[in-house]
Structure formats: structure tokens, C-alpha cells
Length: 192
Image (tube, rainbow, N blue to C red; front, side, top):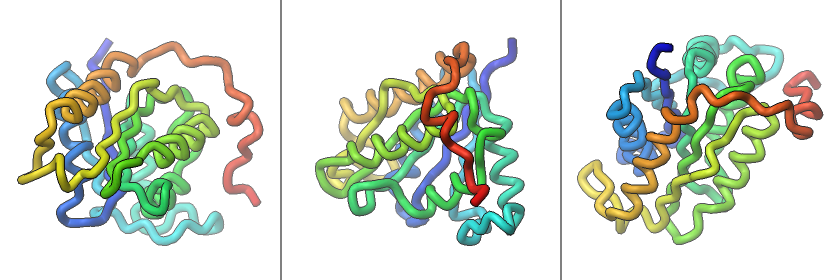
């Protein structure tokens, strides 16, 4: 069996994004275990606001193809108003079961404040609706401005959590899929 391919999605458009630092560190940990990796920086994709009548707008096909090619997907987001970013939501809307079903997904959230957990819960629900296998371990970086400097994580405990996320994306990349969960059987996608 070939080494798994791990894709990391940066759900932030900021030039000095703490989310990017976290995803880059998790991908580096995946590479250290022999995985091939790809960083999908949403700043580099033309993804107009999703319109179900125009699913192939801009770089939508390229983005969806990169997700589809992954064995494991790391989703990283800043916390905005207690949830994940709109830019990540928009990118995910261009994908569906073809890209996500039975994939292993790891979650990372970065907060300016001290409570990034709800964003992770919201992303976990989205991934369950797409019938993904979401890694139980998740990484949170609270008060990011205190724990990231010069493009690296400075807190050893946080770095360990982020590194573990990348390692588990490799370890569980080819986990046997569970039967479809209730949420996924009720998800009809953007057919309205």
C-alpha cells in the first residue's frame, strides 16, 4: 500500500494567519511519518460565493479534485463568532460526498480568545453529514497571539496537540469506514 496523501485546508485569508501556521505544522508531522502532503491555501483559489447552479465556477473543480485525491483531510479554521470561517464554509460547499465520504478528517481551530471549541463542534457536524471519519483528537490553539510567533508554535503542549493531529491523519488514513451515520443519510446536499 502506498503512503497516504494528506491535504490541509487553510480556512483563513489573512497574510499572517495563525491557522496556516497550525496546518503547516500538522502537515509537517504527517510528512515525518512518510505521507505526501498538499497545502490548500484558500487565498490561492478563486471560489466565488457558492451557487448550486454554478458548481464549476472559478477554481471549484481544481479544489474539489484536490480534496477527492486525499486519503486524509485536515481542516483548519480561525474562530469567527463562535464558529468556523465563512471562507471555509464556502469552500466546503463546493464539495460533497464524492470528495469527503469515507475520508479521514482532522480538525484544527485557532482563536484570538480562549474558547475555540464550538468551531470544532460545528465542523465535526458538517463532516458527519458528509459521512467522514473524524479523528477523535482535535487541535485547538486558544489565545493564538500568545502561542505563535515568527511562523511557529511556541507553546510545547499546543505544538504536541497539532503534531498529534498530523500524525493521526496518517495513522488513520485508511481506516475501515463505518456504516453511514444518520446525519449523512439525511443529507441531500445542495439540491434545493
